[in-house]
Length: 115
Image 1 (tube, rainbow, N blue to C red):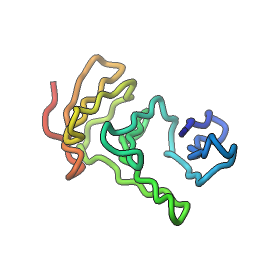
Image 2: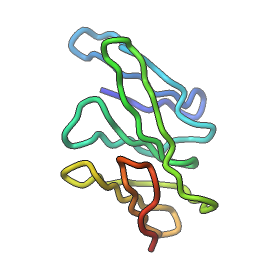
Image 3: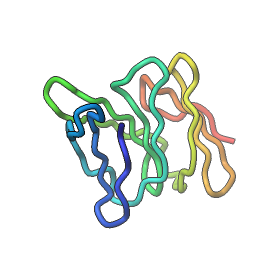
């Protein structure tokens, strides 16, 4: 389980629920985070977004660490409110407070399409 922290700490913590112990944690972003979405085919990868660039996270269970990569989309600034990841974990679609929807390539971390 990976809950998002609140505005006071803005951290994520990966938990081993069966043992009731945290595995690792990390500061999410400079701004607040609205959502977290796990990949469909991996329990080691997830996506976060909010009032900062979306990030793709990878959990290293063996070494108790989290690594992230920001999605590159240029000068566009949005507050991301929701996301859907396609079934084969190749694309993600993000929705914003302005009603925009963007698609990006998960494997290369770049924006593919903007509506």
